[in-house]
Image 1 (spheres, rainbow, N blue to C red):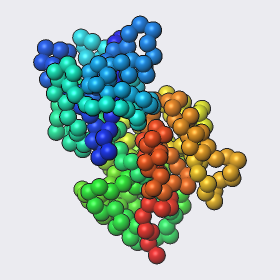
Image 2 (image 1 turned 60 degrees about the vertical axis):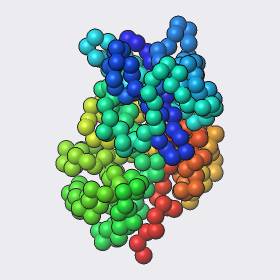
Image 3 (image 1 turned 90 degrees about the vertical axis):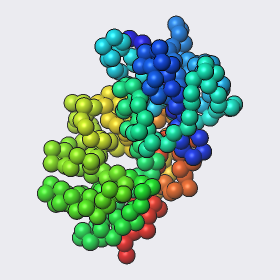
Length: 313
């Protein structure tokens, strides 16, 4: 199997650098994320630094694991070791004559990429902000809350309503989809895996850390987005092994829910998130102004119950 180091490099506009493969190469004339195969004895980070400098002239200073993807093309098997680059120097240029461009994740749906890249694209299209709903007594309160998200650039919204039973959760989810329509954010339901068979296709599912602890089977073959909550390296490692699309890691900053002794802080978050190839969101005391710091620490984004939208009165 060919082990390939792949870089996700973003500019200040959150556009991602992509390059066009040469016509005569494997998967030629398709767009790809820059990188290349590991040489004997190289670490993934070293290979990433070497390949990115050789291909596009940038010097990678800091990067974090993002996702690992195995794919069989029939004539070639590859392991893509995808890393998110957070610090780099230099000017971008196609040093091997390849065409390069900065591309917004949403625009990647209109370009042709190798099949092994499709999951990367899907994960890049995750919002960098995930709002988690407070508990509401009636659906009209949730409806008013969702009104804050009716715009094309909205964040993801996780519906977390532990007081509802199976049928009520499904009812609130369907009604929420009708409110948001096609221009709304990605909708994610916090609930057990047993809900999945009844959920609309576009709705993601989020499991608690308790449910993650009970789970033994992989969730990686599902067609919907599946995430989970984690509080330790052991839980993150299990989430990665079972094929989750993302994880929320908490608590990062002080909240009323956690004592100061249990806080990870940014250094603790960075250390734990870097141990897995999985998009990890920072949770606990987050506010929109924390986003830039979170991304610099290797996070996929931030999540929180408060501070993301103005909730219904």
